Image (cartoon, rainbow, N blue to C red):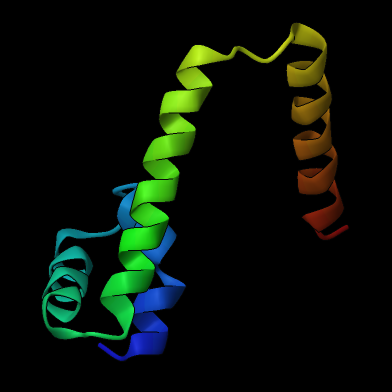
Length: 81
């Protein structure tokens, strides 16, 4: 895999959303790439920080509703007519 393709999929990799084959190829690339690994590690640490923080502080219901409505609106805007 190229560095560009690894970095393009890094968030999906961190979220466990890739096929086993793609995940393995990314893992192999990160094991040897001195350019991609620091970027991956930064994103991994940041994601874990956010996950821990989200468990401590709950969003108020009004904020959750606004976010859900924004997601619904965005999805509706993407649908072809």
